[in-house]
Amino acid sequence: MRDECQDPSAIAEPLLEAVVRGSSGAGGLRPIFDVYRNDFANVAFVRKHVQRKLTMPVIAIAGAYFMDGDVHRVAGLVAEHVTAETLPCGHCLALERPEELAGLLRIFMG
Image (cartoon, rainbow, N blue to C red):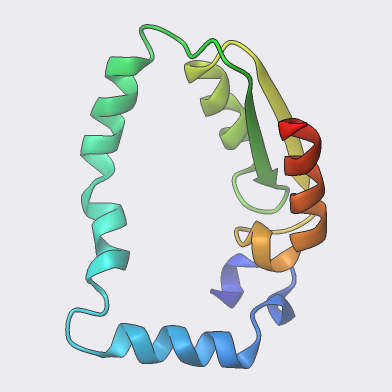
């Protein structure tokens, strides 16, 4: 988790311990692996639905140090009206930049 953060200290030790504890038990890794198991189904879903773009406003918030441009590019494939935002962080936006993320969401949702 810390390797995906621009600021590794954003992952507090108690959180890391809880994730390790939850992942160490029987079946604990299943939800993590399911994300990757479903990649092909997710790609098929996007390909099917990219034929007709979403017409409602969409916000795509990326971490500058984790797939920044890809988040905005993919959002543009599936939606007509994309607000592209970038936070100075890695993968864990809500942990690294909670106030800034909340602020962007508040503005977007009005």
